[in-house]
Amino acid sequence: MLSPSKLISLVIPVHNGEQTITELVVKLVFSLQPRHAIEIVLVNDGSTDRSEEACLSLFRRFPDMVKFYSLAKNVGEHNAVIAGLNQSRGDHMVIMDDDFQNPISEVMKLIDFALEHDDDVVYTYYITKRHGFLRNLGSRLHNGLANVLLKKPKGLYLSSFKCVNRFLVDEIVKYDLSFPHIDGLILRTTEKIGRIEVEHHPRQAGKSGYTLKKLIRLWLNSFTAFSILPLRISLVIGLIFSMAGFLLGVVTIIEKISNPHLPMGYTLIIVILTLFLGVLLISLGVIGEYVGRIYLAQSKKPQFTIRKRFEKTPPSGDHEKT
Image (tube, rainbow, N blue to C red):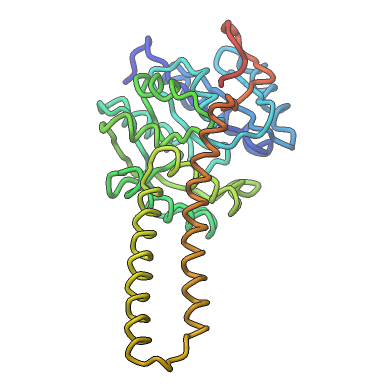
C-alpha cells in the first residue's frame, strides 16, 4: 500500500477524445483517490474536436488532482507523453491512452504491481489485443525490429500502457532532441524492467489515430534515433551486391573470352542495374534520414510547445522545451 507521502501521476495524451476523456478521468478519480494520492496530467495533442473544452471542464471540477496542458500543434503520442512527463510530480507515473482500452481495474492492478516491485518500469502485455488489423500488424513488426535494433529483451512487449518511476522519468526528460521515443529512452537507460498481464478492451468510441503513414514515421523515429544499425545494414547489403557484381563481371569476361560471338544479355544488364540502383537509393534514403534528423536537431525544432496551461500552482519557466 502506498504511503500518504507518495504520489501517483497518470499521464494521458488526449487526441480527439471528447467522447471518452470525461468519463475516464471521473472514474480514475473516484476509483484511485480513496487509495492513493494522485494527479492526472492531461495533454491535448492538437485535437480537432471538443477535447480541450472537456479537459478544461475536468480541471475546473477537480483542480486539486487534474492538470491540463494544451499543445500548440499536434506533435504525436511520444512527444505529447514527454510533455506530460515534464509536468508530472509523482513518484510513479502511469502512461495510458484516453480510449478506455485499458480498464480502470487494470490501472489499479498496474499501480499495485509497480509499488510492490523494485522495477524502474513495468510494461503491460495482453493475451488478446483489441486493436484493428493494421495496428496489430504494426505492433508485431515494431516489436520484432526492436529486438534487433533497440536490443529489446525477447518476450517484452513495448506497450504504451506502462508505469515508470521518478528516477527513470528524470532521465527520460533530459533528452531534448526533436524526436523522442519513450521506449527507446527507457531501454537505453535501465535493465530493471517488469511486466504484468492485463486485459485489453475495444475502443469505446472513435478510431485509432495511427494510420499507415504514422506507423511508418514511428518506426523510422524509433530505429534511427537510437541505433546506427540501419546504416550498418546498408553497408553490408552494399558490400554483398558489390561482390556479386564483381563475380558476375568476372564470369561475363570469362564467357566472352571463351566464346567471342556470345551476345551480351540486355535483360540481364537491366535487371542488374535495377537491383544496384535500388540498393543505392535505399542506402541514400537511410543516410538522408539520419542527416535530416541531425539538421532538425541543430535547428532546435521543439519537442512540444505548450500554448495553454491549467494547473493549481503553475511552475515558473518557459512553456516550450527544445
